[in-house]
Length: 111
Length: 209
Picture 1: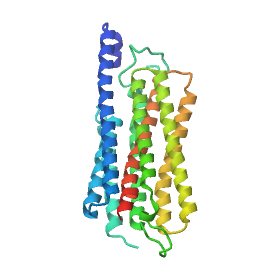
Picture 2: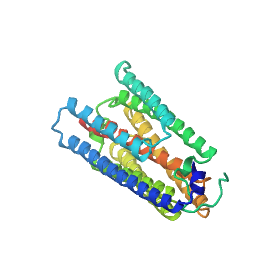
Picture 3: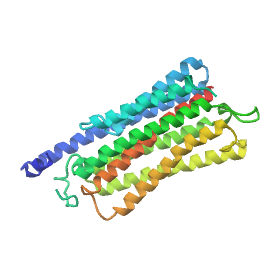
Picture 4: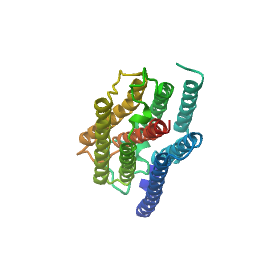
């Protein structure tokens, strides 16, 4: 695919197009970063206030963490780009094992 | 394709990290490694959750007595910021800006070192103020193993990025070292992913009880 680009007589135009495209992508990354900072601040404030019931706050901050990790994987680690099918298969398999392990340790195992 | 061939910004490929077979293998193998790391950290999280606040008697501190949220907040902000700086490094790598990529990786390393310094301060504070050592309770062992394993990953990540920068300082960018930088940045983001769960599950949930 890249060899075609090298032979492309209109290399400069392609280069300019790519620069613009990656600058756009970088803008999305910065917005993602701002959202992650926002979610973190919300989680710390929610716990810092201390007025919410435990039954509400634990699922709430866990949800914020999951959203944040999604941003991290799909934007910062570029998993939303092409060619990440197999990596995401690995990661989701790991997430299933992780979930079952944690679930087992907090429910059916006791000390 | 010769991996050490000189490129210009014009013919530098869109995704230099996966242009060579070696790069493709590094990329895929590294994601497989990260999946394994996910399972490793899951077992440490599970152990921590099972043993949280398991102390021999009431003279030992519990999670809610111990943790200091402003410090954890500062650590979180530093590590999150180091994540976006390594995104910038890869952005410049894909644009064939070697100097800018180096600069952003240096900033990432400095932020990572700042995070590590705060973590060391935190651990020594617990040991001196609360006599909360690795062996004092099941809770403390589980806590130090989980957070300490993350800290060890940060240390390794710092050494890795520094070694990459020093080793390739005069080489410029080529298809041989582009996958190395890319994979190191993936590792750095993974450290951040684990920290998101640590600050939520250990510190914030520790504070609510």
